[in-house]
Every structure is written in structure tokens, then in C-alpha cells.
Amino acid sequence: MVERFETYSFLPPPSSKQIDEHIDYIIEQKLTPIIEYSEDIISVYTFWHMWHLPKGMELSKILVQKMLNQCVHNNPMALVRLSGYDPKSRCNQISFIAKAPQE
Image (cartoon, rainbow, N blue to C red):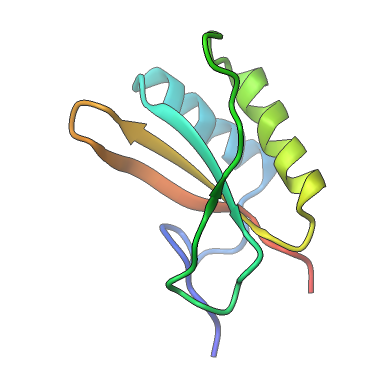
């Protein structure tokens, strides 16, 4: 059985270009980007650790890409999720697995 996580999990893993487009969308919609990771890839009900995004800085596409790449580099055996949080509705508007560990 294939594990399915988040939006787009039925599709092949996203390319760098597709991830960049999602980051553009998150920033254009004025959503707060959230990067999370989890090394427990078996359980659907897993705890996700938040990756640090600098506070007080203007969040740009380059900064979000840099932080996403740092998270992947520091957690090579983890699922890495990128979400766009809307503070007005207090929910995630977009959430998907950006990187999965290589088997």
C-alpha cells in the first residue's frame, strides 16, 4: 500500500519549478509560509516539527526556498511539508509534501 500525505500526494513528487510556483502563490496570496518536517513517515497521525523562518524579515521567494533547502539538507530522511497559512481564516490554504526521503 502506498502512503498518501496531503494535497497532490496522488501525483509524482513535485519538481523544483512546481515548488517555486507554489511558493509564488503563497506569497502572492499574502499567506504565511510554514515549513515542517517529520521523520515518522509511516504514521498518518504524526507530529510535525516546525522549521524556523526568520521573524521580522520580509518573506521572499528566495528566503523561503533557502529555508526549505536547509530543512531538506538537515533532515534527509524526513518528509518536508510546505504550507500556506491564512491568519484571517486561521487555517492552511495550501499544504503539500515538498520533499520525501529517497528510498
